Image (tube, rainbow, N blue to C red; front, side, top):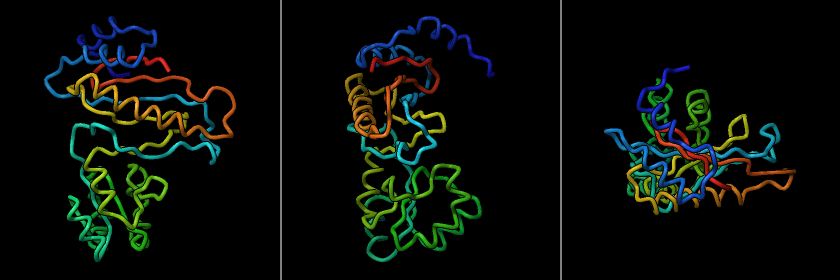
Amino acid sequence: MPQQSKRYRAMAAKASAEPKPLSEAVVSLKEFNTTKFDQTVEIHMRLGIDPNQADQIIRGSLVLPHGIGRTQRVVVFAKGEAAEAAKAAGADEVGQEDLAKRIKDGWTDFDVCIATPDMMGVVGPLGRVLGPRGLMPAPRAGTVTPDAGKVVAEYKAGKVEFRNDKGGNVHAVVGKLSFDAEKLSENIQAFIDLVVGMKPQSVKGTYLKGIAIAATMSPSVRVAG
């Protein structure tokens, strides 16, 4: 277990274990803004799903109301008009076989990978590289699309992807600690509303079991569901 700093231990001692209304939880989290850099804020939701059941997988994407506080690096596999649209929308790299070779050789300096359906024959073999990093384009995530320009623009505006892990938990970036409390709360609430609305019909019992928010170098704060 990594050793915690004196700063972190001091904050953890002040953190309450009791869930708080979202607005209060955000205020508490912002009190941990004592680093020299702008910490990234994440949400963690514990769900009462069975991750081994295909019909209970929670996966999707969302354009947050106020973005995530940084510009995401987006690469696109496309050709023709779709490639031109992706470039116009601000894609960092657009290509076909040439881009696939770079990635196969180990280049993964990007946050999002988008592909048009006609390029999946080129992208498919990259699964071993992109899959473990969560970068493989997928229709369900909206990253396999004929409208590459639109999707690039969404990610540049602050779109986030999510998928439950093996423990049935969902994690996502929801902003920066420097965001106004109101804007950060709106981002978090939008994400919670989306995930809650995705409850599979086959789930029995409690679906939403817990919510916590945390920043890069801060203790977590529990949010009342």
